[in-house]
Amino acid sequence: MAAKRGFQDVESRDVFGQRRKLPKMFRVGLYARVSTHDQQTLAMQNRAMREYAARRGWTITLQVREVSSGAAKREAREKLLEAARRREIDLVLVWRLDRWGRSVTDLLATLQELEHLGVGFVSLTEALDLTTPAGRAMAGLLAIFAEFEREILRERTRAGVAHARQNGKRLGRPATAALHAAEIRKLHRAGVSKSEIARRVQIGRTSVSRILGAKS
Image (cartoon, rainbow, N blue to C red):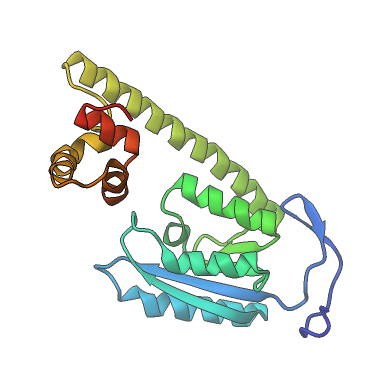
């Protein structure tokens, strides 16, 4: 199969703690991202990555570009991950780590998925290659940082809850059904059945009955 794709297997190498055959010619997917307010570096990222892939003798199978804020869902990145899941690429190449991950936790989660799939990851700016021993050591540090980040968020959440309680604030989200109370009563007066009301406002029939003061 490898020969038909134009690849030649070379000696096994320990990648992410697993032994597998590495193709002589990698199929690489490129990922470039810029913020909505800074799109000037997009061409620069792509050019640098393409030149690097050419120097390494890799075949560029897929190239995706994304323009989004740091917190936004990265749909183009998901396309690249889907290609990795379908085993269409052997390696992901990014310009910089913060272009790929929304946070340390998000970065680690995606790197762990790629590891599980046997797909390599290289960040050009940081000279980070997770198919090498040094790169795997860096991945271990990222895991520590991710746990540190999660602990900080937990501490902030606990502190925020304690502060709110001290100030007599009600915690938690408002009940979804209660937000539709006026609409539910209006539909009921118009003769709409409880089941149909529940379907229209997308809540449970029991919640509808409770608001109307009747048994389900």
